[in-house]
Length: 302
Image (cartoon, rainbow, N blue to C red; front, side, top):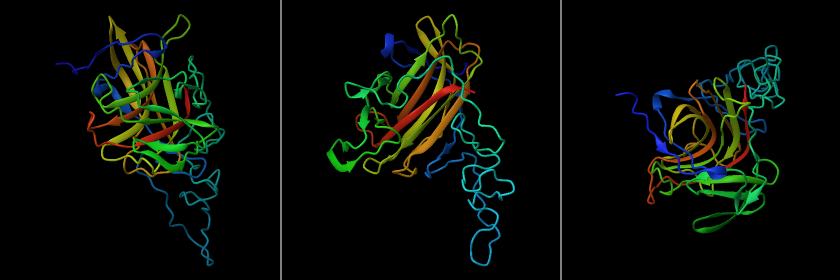
C-alpha cells in the first residue's frame, strides 16, 4: 500500500476552521534550534558542544575565547556572546549576526501576516485571532497568579515581552481526532495574488516551562508548519516540519527560542502555522501533564 496517508474531514469554516492533523510520516521533517539572546538555554540540535578547554593565563582567566563557545576572538565576530560564532544558528531579522557571515538575513513577508503574534489581544479569556483544537489554552497576563487544576499556586507569571502570553496544555481527550494533540494555529489559503507552492516557510517563537506545572512523562511541546492539500472535502499533509520538542528533560523557568522551517511542495493548497502540545498517552486519564507558555511568534519566508 502507499504510505497509508491519514486524512480527516474538514470540520469547520471561517476564522475558527477546525485543524486537520493528519500527516504522512514519510513526507515530514524536523528542523530545530533553540537560542537565547537574553541568557537562557540554547539547543543546537546537532550534538555540538562548546569547547571550553582553551589555553588559560596564569590568573585563571580564559585566553582568546572570552565567551567559551570554542572560537577565539580572531574568528568570533562577538566574543562576548556564546551564541554568536561561525556556524551558529542564524535567526533572521533579529538584528544579530549569529553565524558571523556579516549578514542578518531578512525574514520576508510570507504574503500572509500572523495576527496577534505576541498574544497581546484577548477575546473571552483566550488569545484573539488564533484558532484552536482541544480547548486547552489560556490568555496569561503578566503579573497574574499562575493557577493549575488544583487552584492558585501563589506564584506569579512573567511574560517574555510586553504584557501577555499564551498558555497551552494537554487536551485530555477533547481533540475529536483522538490523537492527544492540543493545537493553537493560524492558516493561510491561496488567493489570486498569493500561492504557497515552493516557498520555504519559517516559524520561531519563545517558550517556557514553569515549575508550577512541569512537563511530565510523555508530554511534549513544539512549534511547526504544515503544508496541506485539500481535495473534495479531505485534507492531507504533504509536508511538515516541527521543532525538537520541549519535554520532561527541558529546563524550567527559562524562556527558550525554538524554530522550524519547511518548503511546501507543488500540491500544497493550505499552510498552517502551529503551536502543538502533544500527549503521547491521550485521553482523560493521561499522565502526560504540564503546561507551556509561548510568546512572540515570528512567521515568514526565507
